[in-house]
Image 1 (cartoon, one colour):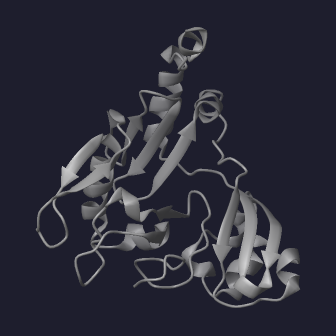
Image 2: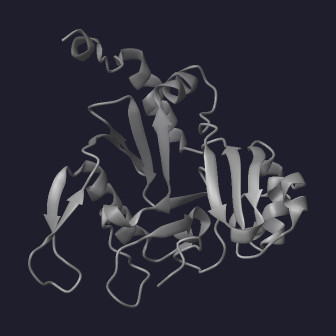
Length: 233
């Protein structure tokens, strides 16, 4: 079984950094175009590997289908019955450009920008407002748990993000050091027995210009989802 902590394309260490490396969870039942045997993706993807891959278009089709689907039946890996049930996100496509497509949730203030080369970017209402004001959207400062392949020692808590990536030998899979300076990186905790690193990486999201232009206009007429009626009932 592939290690979910490794990039499912190149097989190297892949600590998640929003906008540069993200996770595809197995329960989404997205077929893995990089596996020799029929399988579903379950693990991390370097966006640099994704954009360079000959299978990026196949991934784009499968990933965006999942975004738009509700609960749907899909064929099992070996074609046997019964079919599997996939839980999609039920989003609606609101933009299709030469570089990317944009999908919008119907039940929350959430969007997904997906480049035709594969990388995807989660956006919230705050990001929509940031784009409308001419600033760059940034991922939330959520804690990310990640199991390291080695024990780097207690000094890992003092490392910068470029230093961590260099120690893991994957700095070439991420943005240049100068661009990583925009990532607000902080180690929250490190548990040596499990090599478990917990960190925050609030990162600028490099969405295409065509997506930025569309969303800036979209923000002018968008009405945020309200749950007041449900709360009053």
